[in-house]
Image (cartoon, rainbow, N blue to C red):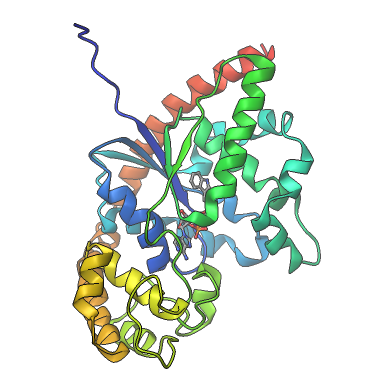
Length: 336
Ligand code: AMP
Ligand code: TRP
C-alpha cells in the first residue's frame, strides 16, 4: 500500500479589474470557485495586466480602486483566504516573464483566430499588441501554477484551448515542462445573457454604462428589482428550459443557480405560473443571495489593512510556486 498522500488538484482562475462585476461573473465563475473550494488547492488572481489591454478604459485611480474591489468581492463571495491564495497578477513578475517565453513558441495565426480578440479589435481604431497577446498572458497565468483545472465561464473556452496548445507545443519543443490544464464549466449558467438583450452575453463594460443590462453584485435591492421586472421575455407562457425563449431561459437559469436547484425542480416549481411570478420570485432570491455578500463586502473594505495583508500573503505564496515553474522553463530553453 502506498503511503503517499494524493496532492489536491490545483485550480487557477481570475477576473479582470474593470467594469461592473455582475451576476454573470458570480454564476459563471466566482460561485463555482466557492462551491469547489474544499476539493482543490485554489489560486485566484486579480488579472490587472490583462485590464491594460484596453487602456482607454483604465485610469490609474480607476485601476487601483478596481483591483481592491475585485479582491474584496472574492472574499465577500466566500473565497476563504485560509483555503485559497488570492493575489494580484502584476505583483508576481513571473507572469510577464513567462509570457515572453511563450510568445516565442506561439504562432501569430493562433492568436488571429481568437474570437474575443476579433470582436474587441473590430471596435478599435488602433489595436494594441497587448490585446493581441492577451491569450498568451492568460496561458502564462495558468501554466505557472501547474494548474489542473480552470473554472471559468464558457466565453473563455477558446482561451483554455489555446493554453493547452501552447503548453503542448512548448513541451514538444523543449521537453516536459508544463502540465496540460482543463477548463471547468457549469453545466447550466456558464453563459448568462444580458437582461435587456438576451441575444448578448452579460458584459462588465456594458453593465457600467447601461441601466438594466446586468445586475451588479453590489447593486441595491431597488435596482435589482427594476432590472429583473423589466427583463426581456416574450408573449408565450413557456417555462421549460428546452422550449423557453432566450430571455426566459436566462431567468430560469439564474433562478436555478441562485437556489442550487435542478432543472426539474425549477420546471416543477414554475409549471402553470406566468412570467410575472418567475420574475417576482427571482427578484427575492437574488436580493437574498446578494445581501450577505454585500454586507461582508462592506466589512472587508472598512477594515484597515485586512485586504493588503491577504494580498501580500497571496503574493508570497504565488511567487514561490511561479518562480519554480519559470526556472524550469528557462532551463529547458537553455537560458542560464
Ligand atoms: P471577465 O469579466 O472577462 O473578467 O470574466 C471573469 C469571469 O467571469 C470569467 O471566468 C468569465 O468567463 C466569467 N463570465 C464573464 N461574463 C459571464 C457571463 N455573462 N456569464 C457567465 N460567466 C461569465
Ligand atoms: N481572460 C479571463 C476573462 O476575461 C481572465 C483571466 C486572465 C483568466 N487570466 C486567467 C481566467 C487565467 C482564468 C485563468 O475572464
